[in-house]
Length: 222
Image (cartoon, rainbow, N blue to C red; front, side, top):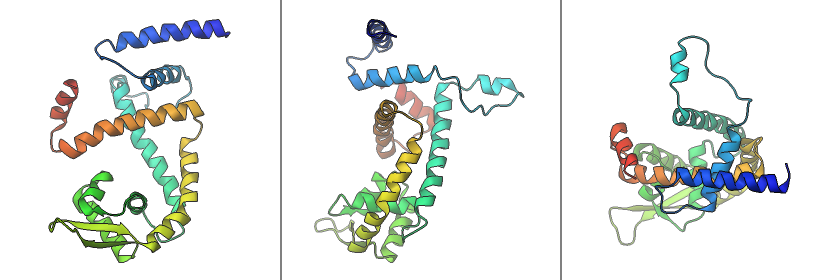
């Protein structure tokens, strides 16, 4: 395909994208690139088929949204398998422990609640991770200077060393998870995932007690 043909197709794609986003006041180049990449991805013929040949209505009633949700779960499981390999050595034993420490590396201190919310965890589970890290002396806790109800935590020198030793292996995990994606696909996926994270983080912080039906209605109003 020559330059003129590519440019002609690009213009056609832009008009098609614009028609799908007429209700929106504006959109960004990143939005358009995500659209282009999604359309190109839809042309791929090879994929892993999960469905069998019984009760075909089950397969036929799974729309793109359902498939995306399922694929996200699968990708998480693949990533967890690779993370487990990376954590075989050292004193950090779980992905949650690593996540708490890597966030604390970038702050002087955080309250326990702030830290737990940043990692998208329920309070009970998050407190268990904090207890383990305190016991291993990878973090320390101290009173908040102005809020007596809050307790601050900070990473220790031991915790920083553990993170520094582990980061190269975590970089390998990232490379393996990205897998067969091109650089353009990786950039597009990163944008789309961060966009989804921004949306769902607001739900987690402010609306997580709503039912699925209520969340769906709220999404329609956005």
